[in-house]
Each structure stands twice: as structure tokens, then as C-alpha cells.
Amino acid sequence: MGKQFKHMETAMIHEGYDSKALLGSLTPPLFQTSTFTFDTAEQGAARFAGEEEGHVYTRVSNPTVQILEQKLAALEKAEKGLAFASGMAAISAVLIALTKANDHIICSSGLYGCTYGLLSMMDEKYNIQTDYVAMTDAQSIEDNIRPETKVIYIETPINPTMEVIDLELVIGIAKKHDILVVVDNTFSTPYLQRPLELGADVVVHSATKYLSGHGDVIAGLAAGEQTLIDQIAATTQKDIGGVLSPFDAWLVIRGLKTLPLRMDRHAENASQIAEKLKQHSQVKQVFYPGDPENSGYAIMKKQMKSGGGTLSFEIKGGKAEAQAFLNKLELIKIAVSLGDTETLIQHPATMTHAVIPDEQRQKMGVTDTLVRLSVGIEGWQDLWEDLNQALT
Ligand SMILES: *Cc1c(COP(=O)(O)O)cnc(C)c1O
Image 1 (cartoon, protein in one colour):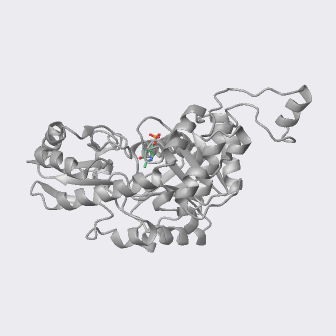
Image 2 (image 1 turned 45 degrees about the horizontal axis):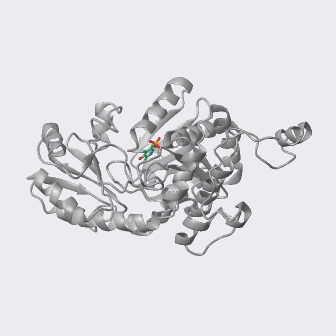
Image 3 (image 1 turned 180 degrees about the vertical axis):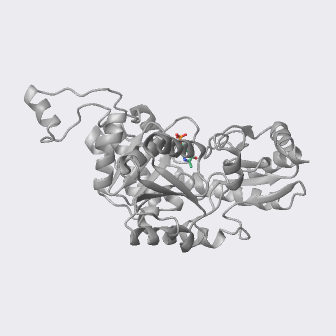
């Protein structure tokens, strides 16, 4: 494909698709098929041998899925993108492909609960150990590097504490030691932050969240340099097989068209709500990277377009008070997931991060009174009214 649009807003809509090539269909057609017929036995053989371009089977490639993969690659400034059945399918395919038994991983001090579960399983099964490091300064990272360190895995902002990690700092150290950097870019999306441009090797996404944006699909994506992505495609994607269905790819393509509009509104609403929460007597602390008083604000300004649409906050009291607060909300829905048009709230300690052992979870800052709010694109005054009545 390779047509590069100057503005990301244009690329979100037009990249990876030429309507002229497909009967003038304005929107990309849905190729809902499991397999592709060959004209002759020889043609089938040539496609399997890689001597002739073309699709053979949807677990290997599909035209609708490919449009999404090309879009993501263009948006992330990657050579190649790959689509998966979920964010976890993408993350597990990437991490398993890039490591072997007895390797070592350095990970940000906080991360999505199921990714923590995956890393624990890789340790148990293959002795691939992970150290969780705050990454606030160069020394803290250098001190944890071993000869067998293969990957530095980062989430920024970190789910759900919203800490921001300096990508330039981490990538600089990784390059010096020939270590691959994988960034989970789910919270930012390429509209706000592009880690590959800063030198990261692979980005992964839960496209379930902002990229699709409407709470109607589970999907994952990965993007990076051609050789790495080809390796992932040929091994852990093809043979473990967590590929995206064409219909789900079609939904993500549709969602992507409005990503810039949605992200701007999510961020605007989140800024307003963060400001209000900070002034409320029942709120202990607010964590939002777009808040000028947030400790990560300067780094956010350096590497992100805005603070994004998700924030978290601690309310006064204990777990019972946090749960009672959630139960009193009327407009805002109690649900995990984020990045939807609807505002969603959840209690990480007992929901998304419940799998992390207590002590490790506390160390990550996921306390019993922390709640995560994915601010939707409704009128923010209505959201605040609901939060305020539930807090009081
Ligand atoms: C939701 C999420 C995932 C997992 O994605 P699924 O699509 O649910 O598999 C991974 N990383 C982050 C940061 C997430 O928020």
C-alpha cells in the first residue's frame, strides 16, 4: 500500500483501502470467508510455496483483515501490522515469539492484570523470569539488565494507576544493550503517542478499547519492523492461531474513522472531570496524566498529544466505601473495558487486577479504594452530576 497521508485524521479513514479496486464500494467489503479457491492445483501449490501472491486461508490472511493491518501500520509508522482475536492474543503472540526458555524480561512496575498472568505463566513453564521496575531513572533499569534480558515490556500510561514512563529514556538504554522494546499502546492509541517513532521495536494494542471505540468487539493488534512482524506472523500467530475474524476487523476499521474526534472529546471530558474530582472532599487523590499537577505531566507533554480519556482516583474510606460509591452511580456503568463512547467505571483491586497477588498489587499502587474511570464522550456536566451525587 504505502500511500502516506500527511494528516493522521485522513489516514484513519483512507489508508490501506482503494475503493476503485473493489467495485467502487465506499466502505471496505467484508470478506466473510474461511478459505480461498485456487484456479488450478499448480496455483495452490505456488501460493503455499510463497511463489505467487494471494490468499489461501483466513487464519493466514484475509483481505478485510489486511486492510486493518495496513491502516495500523501506517498510523503507527510501522513497516507491518498484524491483527489478532484479542489484545491478549496479540500480547501473548508477540512475547512468546520474541523469547525462548530461560530468557529474561524487564517490565514496567504496573501493567494489565492478564499480561501479568501471562508473564507469570511464562516463568512457570519456561523459566522466563520478569522483573517489575519503576523505570523512573536510568539506573533503576540498568541495575536489572542481565545477559539473558531479551525484552523490555512497557505500558504507558500504566493501567490503572496512569503513571507515565519516559519512552525515550527506556528505549535509549535498551538500544545500548541490544534489548527489544515492546510497548502496549492501548491507552494512547497512535493518535496520541507513537512509540515506534521513538525507536521501540513492537507496539501492541487491545483494539477492543479506543481503536474500535464502541464496545462491540474484542480485537488485538501488533505492529513493528517487517522482520519481527513476519516472524510473529509465521510462528505464534499462524500456529497458535488467535487471528481476528473478518467481521471484527470490519468493525475496527469502522471505529478507526472517528478515532481522532473521539479521542479529543474523551480527553477534554477527562480533563474537566479530573479538575472537579480534585476539588471534592471525598476524593483522596486523582491520577490523570493531563493534569498539570500530575507527576507525569512533563513526560506526557513530551511524548503524547494529550492526557487521554482514562483517569483513576482514590476515594476516602476503604473497599466498602469504594464499592458503595460505584453502586450509587446511575448514568455511569460499572464495567471493565475502556475507551467506549459510554463512560465506564470499575474497581481494579477486585476486577481487572484481582489476579495479581495482594502484596504485588499494593506495590503497583492498585489500592482497595482506587477506582478507574474511562470517561466517555457524553456531556461532561451530566457525568459530573452523577459522580458528585454518588460521592456525596
Ligand atoms: C484490555 C487491555 C488488554 C487486553 O486486551 P483484550 O482485548 O481484552 O484481550 C491489554 N492491555 C491493556 C492496557 C488493556 O487495557
